[in-house]
Amino acid sequence: MVDATVARKKSSSFDLVCKEIEHTIQEAEGSLERFQENRESGEDLQNCIDCLNQLRGIFTLVELQGGTVLCQEMVAQANEVPVGALEDKNGLLATLSQALFILRRYVDYYSTRREDHPELLLPIINDLRQARKAKALPDSYFFDVTFPRPVLSSIDNLQIAADVFESRCRRLRHMYQIGLLELLHTRDLKLAFNLIERSAQGFSRICANAPLAEYWGLVALAGRVMRDAEMEITQPRKRLFMRVEKYTRELVHVGKVAATRSASETLLKDLLYLIALSGIRDYNIRMLFERYKVVEPDLDERKLVAHRSQLMGPGTDVLRSLAAVLQEELGLLKDKLDIVERGVGIQEADFGSIANELGRLADTLVMLNLNQLASKTRAQQGIIQEWDRSRRFPDEQELMSVADAVLSIEQAVMQLEGRGITSETDHLASAESSVADSPYLAEANIVVVSEAQQALSLAKRAIVAFIEAAGDKMHLVNVPKTLHAVWGSLVMMESPEVARIVENAGRYIQEALIDSEQIPGELDLETLADALTSLEYFIESLGRKGEGNAELLKLAEESLRSLGY
Image (tube, rainbow, N blue to C red; front, side, top):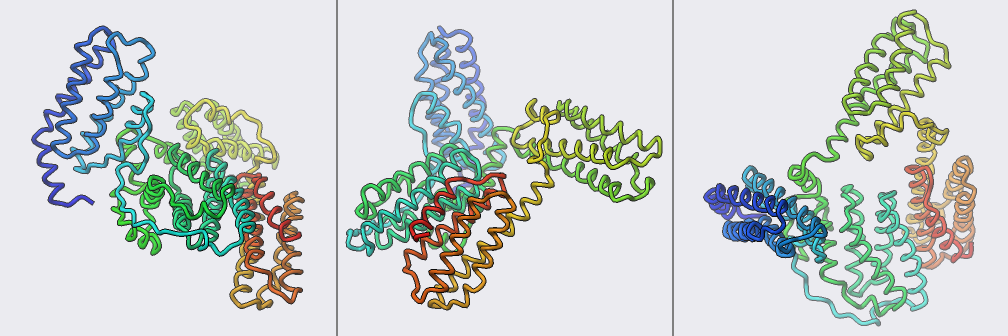
């Protein structure tokens, strides 16, 4: 946090040079524009560089860090452009022009808010660096932490056999890789972070008493906060979790000695920044910040996105709001059609009102240039107007035809946020919808999946209670029946392979935990937990995507096979 007195001093200094900054930016823009028109004009190019150097000096003087760093990068970029530059330098010049535009916007931003947030400029700074093939700055570049003295450790501190260590690491690495692939393809992000968190927690436990245990604790925490705060999935964040995967590989191939090494401070800093940026502040995170003397950022993820949007113009928030308004209108239409379907009289159904609402919706779609969707809406408006004019109550087939059309329009509107206002979105109006796309089938699938998730969650809690009660089998009495209910749900969803794995898990619990006189060892119970967790995540992804992740099934199957089932 910036001290109030320092902030006032910076603000006063900025006011003294504000006009000079605006004039110099304008002069730099003019010189760059003239050079782009006449590539032989070395004087214009040099004048642009001189202006950028002057701006860097002014920003340094008034302690505006964002402006200073951006000008420094622009100077480096401009020096890469030779007099007489050919078309191969167009990329450098285009990025430089964009950076000048954003610098002007950033000066306006600071002038209005009196807040210097250099992290807002990282995307354009890295665009400049990428254009001249320099290494990108990490997201945590402007983030301050203090690393405690490293703890020395030896391999003797790891109280686990080498073969067990390797076997456990391989399974945990497999789990991490499944989550990483989901993350890299930006598919099922909740599943991705669940798997990353779970595997990192497992690595933290088997690396207990070694330096790498704390690192894996940070990875698990970073995965959790990214999921809970629904943080953006950017390329730097994908690369961060790819760098984490290197440590899983070392633990598998090098063995226990790899756990005694310390993780890269750069990687630790990136993980801490993600955690700080999430805005989540529970007890564990506060203790972590105290240990690393973290200077909390002024902007959390939500504010960072909003402030960048202010610099760069409208973003997905506009589309999100638009989609929400359209869906609200369609929801009212569906409610009225539902009243008609239930046999209410024509007067109460008010076909004229429904037709008018469809007309307004069509007008909105025309304004958005979604003409195919608008035409489909107009067609349904005409049908309902005919019902209203003739005072005729529609038969079931006619009513279902209109309802299907309204649902297909709704499905297209729901994809506005992801696809944008494009011809691809508009084309959804004429696309044939299959039975699998039916929203009714999707809702039924959600109900079945929800019940299966609850059953697996209850089974896991019962096993935890069994362990904590030193083997009291009363906690497990209902678990096989619960898993049998899951089996039935999966058979109904035509997932025989998954049902078989659930059946094997229930059989192990019955035979090894309930019928047996001995309690299995900690490693076996941990392996059972892996199997149930993998199944839970698979079923959860089944509900969100309509198809599960096959790798999760393999992971569950591997876990049960290692138990002899």
